Image (tube, rainbow, N blue to C red; front, top):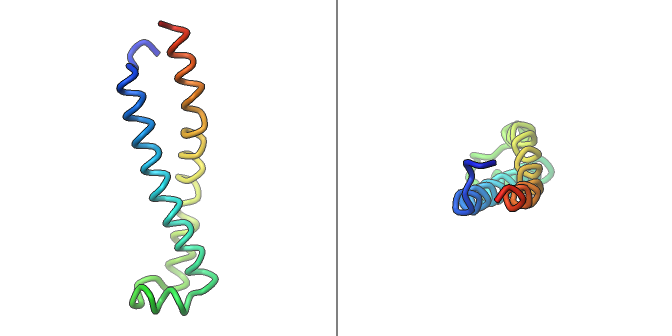
Length: 85
């Protein structure tokens, strides 16, 4: 933990939060595309059909879980950094 500064920690925290926001939005929209596929096809002008929505929902599940784990474990990392100082 010696190589991580407080500024690097804050940048990492911000990047993980932004990525988490984007992936959560994609998962929500793709979930709506699965359940309300006709409405989402109309809104997205046919780009987001039911099969693409399902594939996006499945593909982004693992990155979502990884980012949630990282996001929730960052305070532990910060407390370890303080102990090492």
